[in-house]
Image (cartoon, rainbow, N blue to C red; front, side, top):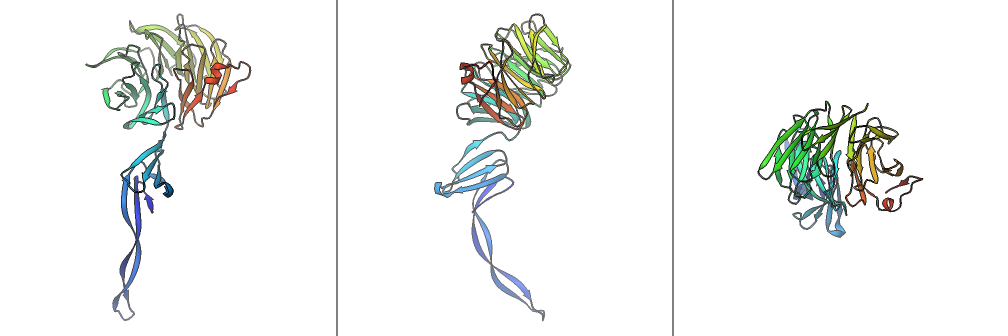
Length: 393
């Protein structure tokens, strides 16, 4: 028999008959003992898991016991040797706020959420690495272009860098922002990190084996910085803010290059690969095209029928871009004419972020309900259907 508890303990127990003697008082006041037996459960083996035990399934024909927990994990125990148990499946048990692929490699991706950063195999969906920081929320995750570190931004105002192979903490930038770090991007030379905070500042940090320091702090935003993206050569970056502004920053002089305004809370922004235009979106449901050199709006389309658009990404050839948000639908658009060419329905919660893989074969989207979905873009890229939006799976 197997028993699971609320503190994560799993027991294998056996029934035992234990003799007990109950005192019996007669009507004449004489006390005597009445021998009888009682069934008790004797623990044979014990294992400790994370979370509460919610499910136990003994597959005795396989000599295995499967145990599910409240933190969305399934473990398999060897019924002959409980020291040999393995994690066979896990997923997110809370909201997911960030997702990213390494530069020029589509085989893995990372997600950011409550207490953790997770590294996943894009081939079979297997969790490869879990980086935990208790009682904190990871808001953004990114990879250095050389692939030697995973950079993460956290709700305690810190930047933490981890090894993607061992999970070891490489360095930590304390007080990167006085409040939460809400946006982040890395430069192509792997020497700088650009961060945005809840207080509205955009900061540039230099990192090296000898240490790290802040190069500059820029203060044009008056509200939360929601997104930061680099241009193709990392000479400029663009930041969006919930104060209704997007700023293109010169990362050589650390000055404002251009600013755009709109009556919305900007949630996301991205450079066109050529760097000539930027795309923005937010709570007004409009996807806006802006000229980067003069800040003029040149086109807008309505990208959602309800709710904000929270995430944008664009293919590296600039032909397609992808959106997702409160509508819970992933939408694929053709860039040059703004035509909707495909939709993906599968999320049951608000989409918080998404990314296109470097090989342009998949989209990875994450949502507030903890879902991480991968969408197949191979058919779409090979055969664009301009007339009727096609549903992707």
